[in-house]
Length: 391
Image (cartoon, rainbow, N blue to C red; front, side, top):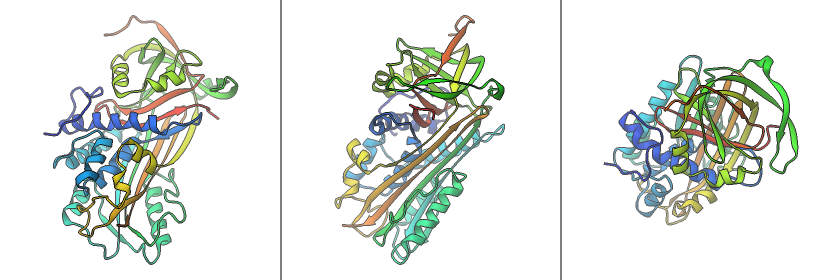
């Protein structure tokens, strides 16, 4: 029986596989957010997608390398984990494609021609991650290999994630690449009427303002508040997936909200949501982010995977396989009709050595806030980000 470290986040009445995976991914989500927020920039990422890619690498890791990856992912890996994660991916995809909404995930295994792969590893990725082995010739033509992988990423994110691996990122030393992609388009259960969208000021972190297009409506939504923040949940039609906004109650309250964003606090906040009549003003926005995750993942607790001491003997019989880079790109677009979001992760490996009384609540998101895209059935967070400047 697999053991996870943290309580399930809103995971009542879940399939067994989902309930075991969600708390680990959500713990990784808040830890990743804390690690990657810098300055006053907008942020969007999918730790769920990153965790899927790292889980594929974990399937071939051993010893200290495996232990560190498990620690970073907040899980105890056993023989049932890959099948459980595969079942969650399939369940999310089934539930997310309804009433005009879409949710797609895809995974890839790209291997240097002639590089031997352990049959157990190849079978695990093919059966549980639907990532069949694709041979490429990194040694003779790394740019052609890079172009093929990038085209695959574009196809599986509807062209929202392009150039996942930039020019020169893959070279003759590359032996294996793992890729994971996710695409989501959700139609609001209660869409905004475009004619009600109006320009209004949005207060920036330093106190200045910028004009933004605010979508406006009053309807019944999930709502909760804490002494320092308002929490709004808006559902996507028919999917069980929701858009959560964590809005500080004061203009200067955003740093404190970020500091308090732990898995325990988030679980408590979302667990207190109840249906309220809410007057919502939410800016339309679009954000993109890209990261090299090598330093962040090392700092979070898995440095060995990037060194000559890495143990990936479960991938191939040859020694000296290590991760040289982990890249991640993500995109989100929030409008009157719904939300479009996508993300992709690439891992390059080289040879080396109760209901409230009915009343209207005002929720005006006219200053920086944190947002989530979350499956409310399983509790798993698919995307997390922050809006610091809607322009």
